[in-house]
Length: 114
Length: 111
Image 1: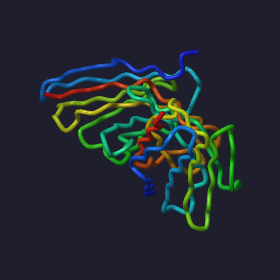
Image 2 (image 1 turned 135 degrees about the horizontal axis):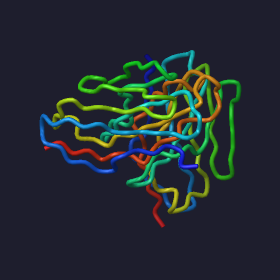
Image 3 (image 1 turned 180 degrees about the horizontal axis):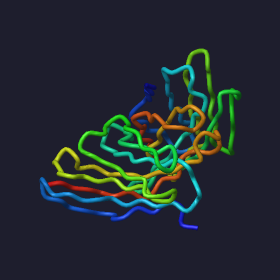
Image 4 (image 1 turned 90 degrees about the horizontal axis):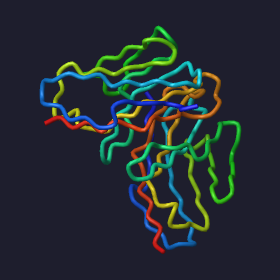
């Protein structure tokens, strides 16, 4: 039982390059989320998917797109990376709506855009 | 949307002392309040949570209190140990949907 698996763990991009961060969970959770974490700013929601087939913008969606491929997988795409997107990205899942438990986080992706 | 404020941003305590971290929230509909601990370079981990129908919850050296009227909740760590050193985040949500996080408190326990 792996929980939430994120890949890659580290990535360096040049400005303007694109990449996709992958996330998969094996807990049969309905909801999945992408957060970015920056010093002094806590965790900010980029996009979330309340259930398979739905996605919604969070607090900081600009410059990102997401795909809920199936119930297990939720990917985050940077189409044209910018230095402001240098951050640590966390994927999370939850059994949202039931009020039971909190998020389970992936191990994070440390992204540097130069 | 919800706005969660967390204080202090940094906290240093002597080993064995207590630590208290406070959060306020703005949306009266929020009813689920988890706390996460994040060690350096690791993922946030849920350490305790409280629902709005409960005023206090304890788990060994950790306790959380909730004041719905004032819309604030607090994390209390007693008998602190060096391994408690980490960044702690509070969050608020409605039925576990979309969490809004505080900006974190960096706790240092001095041996």
